[in-house]
Each structure stands twice: as structure tokens, then as C-alpha cells.
Length: 223
Image (cartoon, rainbow, N blue to C red; front, side, top):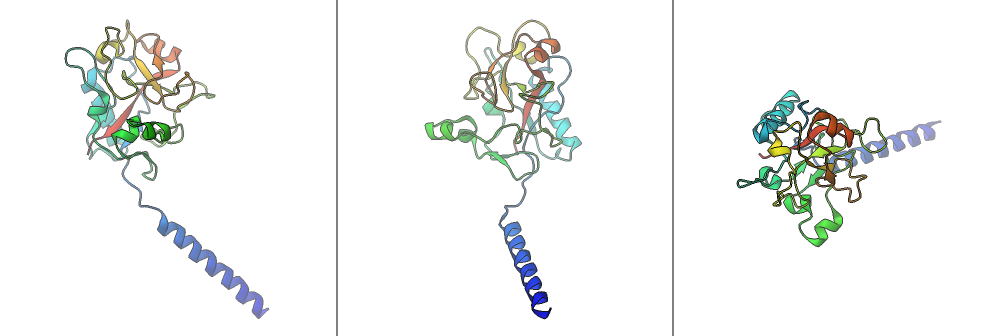
């Protein structure tokens, strides 16, 4: 009986050591610096321009205790004073809700600027691209599918330079026009891009819902 007790104690000690080692090996959690909005503004792609979209990001972040950082919407605009989405979000790295999953170390890894970076890709996917509340966004196979994320951008994170509307009149239209969207679960739509998969059917809430969206967009902390 004495030997049995010693054996049990030994096993328990080894388990405790292994558990401690594994815990110590985990990097410390980082503050959330990336999320998908849990809700849109409810007016289709009329976000009140970049200013309105940024304010929405800031408000949602503040509601979960991350209002101490400055948040920017990942959106491009078009025209004479076009803005590139990638130029709005800082240099990285960026971490998803929970702080243990890095989505990308920098702009190059986020957008696949080199062949190696594009081949490996960033970490964005259904279980990484979470809302500010830590919930996954409905994607392929879910009902309703809401994985269409407003970006108005090309795959490299830059604005479109042609005459077509890719930003619903720079995020002020809830009727005519179209917006380029990505897929937060990186599934469906041919190229399965997180930031530039296809165009929406229009700019109204109904049109966004019709292609698998809800007027959601990405938010990044820039500090």
C-alpha cells in the first residue's frame, strides 16, 4: 500500500510539473487589437464615411474595455483624395480577441506583400476573426451567413483607381452603388480572400444581406 501511495504521489508531481511547464511556455496574452464589428450601423453601407466607421469601432472597443486605444476601420475610399485601408491601421502586430492569436506581425504578412508571405498567409479565419465580444461571425454553413465584410479595397489593401463604385460612395450610400467585400471565414467566393472577394449587390441593408453580409467591417487598433 505504501508503494502504491508513493507511485500515485509521483505521478501527481510529474503532472503538476508538466502543467506548470506548459503554462510557463505560453506567451502572455496581448491586448486585443483586431476584431470584426459584432453589429453594423444598420443603414447598409452608409457608415457616415470613415469618421462614422471609426467612431463605431471606438464605441464597440470601449464597451469591452479597450477604449484606451485608438481604433480605425479597415476601409478604403476612392476619388481624388483616396485613402488606402492598409494606411489607416498602423504597423502591427495585431492580436484577435483573447490576445493569444496573432493575426499578422506586420503589413507584409497581413496583405501577402511578398511571394512567401502570400503563400503562407495571415491567420484570419472563422475562429480567429472574432467580434469584440469574442464571438465568431456566421460564415459558410451557418444561417444566416454574415461573412461579407465591407472593405472597399483591393487584395493588397489599396484603394481602387477605376471609375466603378467599390465603396458605396465612400461609405455614405444606402442605395445605389456597390462595395467590395472580403470573407471573414476565408471560405467561398472563389478566391476566399479576407479583404477582397466580390462586390455587393448594392448598398442597402437588404442588398448586403442578400450576398451574405450584415454591414460588418474590420477594426484595428493603431496604438
